[in-house]
Image (cartoon, rainbow, N blue to C red; front, side):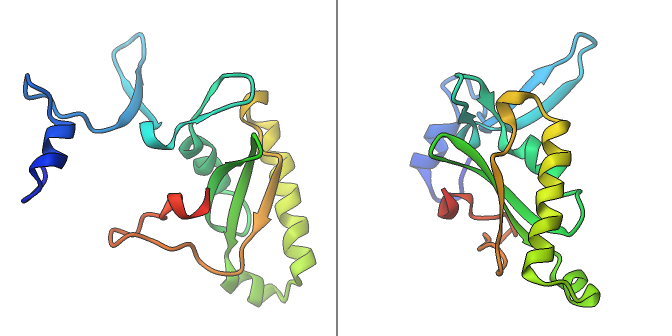
Length: 144
């Protein structure tokens, strides 16, 4: 439960004593569990499909010049927000236009590896880091 917060504890521990984490997962045929994302982060795609932004972010964060990223939904479209690796941008002497061109290429590469229902419509480059919680998670709710 939650320290000195009985109401929050009641919301996550049911009457049988089970703790509900808010994680969404799947179990494979051979019994392995795979975490897809968090219930509160799940987005509903325009065709009704469940979209787990963490899965897309995992792929996007491994792409060229991406330091931090989140995926949000705006006007029923998925948008990647990216804070680039500014040290590398500076070392390479890249202009804003060149950084955007790299992100446009990342967008093409990423979308080619994703099912149609969870492809991004664009990547928006941020010039500052994302606000974070004390445990260094991005405060996702600030960017929706």
